[in-house]
Length: 338
Image (cartoon, rainbow, N blue to C red):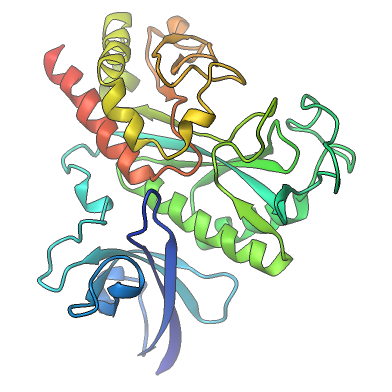
């Protein structure tokens, strides 16, 4: 028998955004075949996570995804859904609200975040501000980059854990970075994104720096942080057509007020119409337009309008499960109508 460490990870019930929580369970196995269904459910004190009252505090963790934990010996990371004691999904369980039967939907998230030194982004001087933004995006060198060693350590952990991270880059604000996650079904991109966030928290713990997902970490003439959502379904990828693609864009515009509440808090500080955003009160789409709500990639018209669309509205602190859920609702209605 071998003792294995399983880090059960879940989302709490705090509002407006959930926080990651975790605890370690040690289990004995003769030969663990990495089948997540063989892991037991585990209860926790929901009264300490805004998910239950003290007089009836037990909530249940249901393992749904398993990853290797490259930072610990004989260890795994276990992503869990939160369930009520009767086995039904807890009201805070956004993953369980994603509709099934839409496995042809692909999602790619561009997660921006800011590394912090106290209350200021990493690389900012103690007083005042660095040079105006412009030289920091995808840059190199100590003058224009802060925290690369942290970002590289995070990328290595994610890849070793088996997450489908497709890239990283320095962003427009000094100390701001981005990683990209791709999932070829409605669940895996969100699962991998939450796990990548968890690993990023652990890495920043080790380096002794802060981590900020707020969509406007520095006020003024500085870019905010978003989490652009690239999405497609089988018809978009294989059939396309200008009418269909623009019908999706029109539907997203009609449902703008339904989508925005699902796209993260304090997003009005970022979606101002400046810094490569459309105003939160407005909706627009355009070819290669990074100031629009929806960007149509430049490659689409020459490819018979086949491919994906980019929703640029989600904030960096958004829950990917909520984005996926509302996106499927809106886009699938167009698929049925066209």
